[in-house]
Amino acid sequence: MQSEFSTTERDQQTSSEDAVRQAHALRPHSWLTEDYAAIVVALVLLVICSLSVATAIEGEQLTYHNRLRDWLGLPASWLASPFDAFLGTATKTGAWQRVVGAGVILWGVFTLGSAAIGRSVARVGRAFPAVFALSVLAYWLSENEVIKAYSLEYALWAIVLGLLISNTVGTPAWMRPAVMTEFYIKTGLVIFGAEVLFNKLLALSTRGIMVSWLVTPIVLIITFWFGQRILRIASPSLNMVISADMSVCGVSAAIATAAACKAKKEELSLAIAISLMFTVMMMIVMPPVVRVMGLNEDVAGAWMGGTIDSTGAVAAAGSALGQRAMEVATTIKMIQNILIGVVSFAVAAYWVSYVERDTDSTRVERPRLTEIWKRFPKFVLGFVLVSIVFSAINVGANGSSLVNAIVKEGSKSFRAWCFCLAFVSIGLDTNFRQLAGQVRGGKPLVLYVAGQSLNLGLTLLMAWLVFG
Amino acid sequence: MHILRDDGSQQVSRNELRGFCVAIFVVAAMIGVVLPALSRLPTVKQRVDSLKQFHINGNATFYTDQTALETFDPTESRR
Image (cartoon, rainbow over all chains, first blue to last red; front, side, top):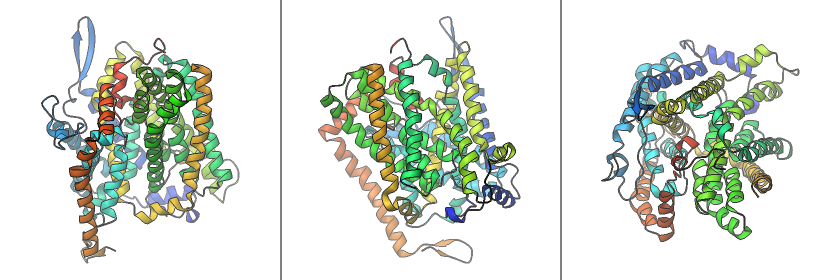
């Protein structure tokens, strides 16, 4: 996200070097930069999840489980009664305990962590529960079975709820200290690293890897080039976020690349809105189109897995054709998911080496390594390092069970809440005029449609070549 | 426009308060009326049941959120 200290007009931007200096000057009481603070907070949460792991012997096998699993989680899905999400039903236990547990831990960690970036502990401590309550409301809405069936993810509801407040009564001044979009996103991404397991890729389908890892980067690069050279989109970061969420895997890719290329919060909102809109359309339209085309389930699953943005919608669309199509589609999307680590690192490196150099009018030659290091978003390194560490753990004996206990029963909830808190913060900090300004001219929509058309064509060709 | 008081707190205008109440009403109506009505439509009901049958989490952001992956093995041996 664009630094909160920079102006919103790109042409009025100072050089990023100056911006870094200004940011430091304006934060005289901060002990750490936001990037390092996010890494520390994320590591604290990962350590909490790791220390709460307990061992058990099942048969002759050593297994792990997380003692916090009953205290960390999201609202459960609900259909008839909204209260089922928290109180549970006859067949399902209630989630209130897991929501409250996650909220209390995050409240403590973020309140203390905010001191490191120069915020008032008392003010953040007072404001955080309100922002978290809005996140609970957003997740609760997204867990409605009807909403869930159409993959209208929590990000949408979080932004909408925030916007409803900021554009009517205004975000209350007392709530603003906990509106920390960048801090939540960076922390969430470092935690997210524990879920991006590179070694899983080796065990996955080589045919799937050909579809995901050949087509995805080609589509990403060509779409970005198209946006810059043909459409001449003024903001390269908006271009990159739309290109990435369309070619990789929707919301999660948008978050990772937006943070890596320092996109503005309204650019991330717009990219997600466009992506969700097309996800719903493609999820409904593609299965009947596939039937008309007479594709077999393997080719159809690979095609849908490689083109529909959202991980949830891919499985839903695949299941409309059958179990086999669902399995292939989900596997292809899983391989694309793992690509996020590489993409965000590459985007961050490209941005500090080339894009920021080009927008810096005082500099023409390639920046030196020290300068690249200074500009490089450090939390991306935290994200990649956590990913490498957890991939290494996953390879070891019983490693998969240990990673499952830490991640699936622990840190995954923290990651989900961090991203939801970030989207609520974006809504609370954005006005409709800013959002409308991004859509003007319709170029973002044209970019998405052009990129997705290329994606559909190339993925179908590759799916037919390797699965046909 | 929000009016700032001397102590820095915000004073909310009547129009803004009205807008907020309308927003709350819309959200409440969606939860209390629209969603239950939609859930009774045969096509929607069929879709919800189908996702349940395949253990699919339609809201999954990442593969670790996808419950369907727990029902099959996505490794090379299966593909």
